[in-house]
Image 1 (spheres, rainbow, N blue to C red):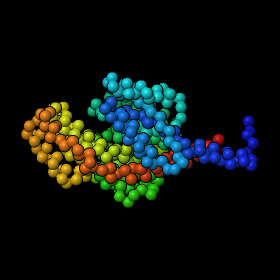
Image 2 (image 1 turned 180 degrees about the vertical axis):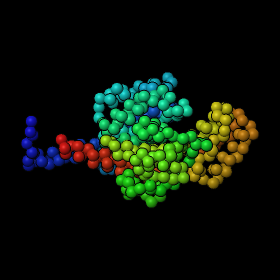
Image 3 (image 1 turned 135 degrees about the vertical axis):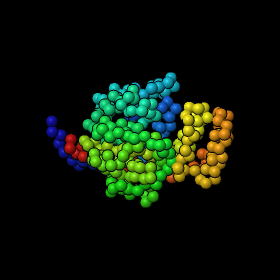
Image 4 (image 1 turned 120 degrees about the vertical axis):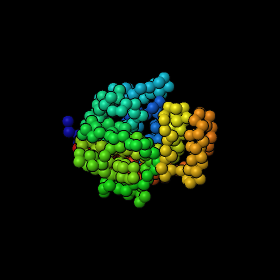
Amino acid sequence: MIVPEPRGRDVTSARLLRLRARNCIEIGLVNNMPDAALEATERQFRALLDAAATSGMVVRLKLFALPDVPRGEAGRRHLSRYSDIGDLWNSRLDGLIVTGTEPRKPTLKDEPYWDSLTRLVDWAEHNTHSTVWSCLAAHAAVLHLDGIERRPLDGKRSGVFECSAGSNHPLTAAAPSRICMPHSRCNDLPEDALIASGYRVVLRSAAGVDAFARRRKSLFVFFQGHPEYEADTLLLEYRRDVKRFLLRERETYPPMPHGYFDEETAGALAVIEQRARADRCEERLADFPADLSATVRDTWRPAAAFMYRNWLRYLCMQKEQRLSAT
């Protein structure tokens, strides 16, 4: 059936409806984080997308989770309000964000959710305009697509690192001159292997490749860093790892996050580390100051918002082209 071109007032109405449709972006968030971090991860990505959305842009976020990620009772109860992952396989979204999770196995292919995650990679290529793969999800995606293995680091890479643009990429258009990004990971992807497989480095720092991308049927964007982090996320992770050391759940004392604490706070935490090493017991955690959140800032937020704003604009542009074609 051929629909006649609208005339008169109907022209204005049709253009307005088309503009609204183009600027209404449907994004899925596949939240695979451990139970204790589920709610915080939702909040972080909602806040970042809200900061990135321009006036007149509407972002509708739909929550999913892979069913094979091990969960406790609290996690299963929280995920009961998420959409069923089965609904995703038969749908299409403008954009998708897939989080990582805490690794349990030395090899990603041995993780219980490997098959579900690789199915998600294949689905996203054909059913999104663009997908963001975060941290472990980025490692899993490039392993599935191109066989690039992540490599373990000598120790956890944690902190805020200043980045430089690896190329003139649309994701960094109009970004601030100084770009910082937080990292929190124990593995890394070799840059030479990424470039040899056709990936384009978007940001790099002393922590290695921060962000990279590859245009397939969908534009795949990968972050080894965490632009979504809140100001105190690294602090909370550091305190958690100190507690694990004191409980003997890990053998080494965690490194202090790089470029994150001011000089006075770093000095106080160094004293706490000395005491904890000398007297390794849970009671030493009481030495950890309760008010440290006031001393840290999300210095990466302006750059993170710019990059995600450019990503949302890309989704709008792709949706407009699809609507025009139909």
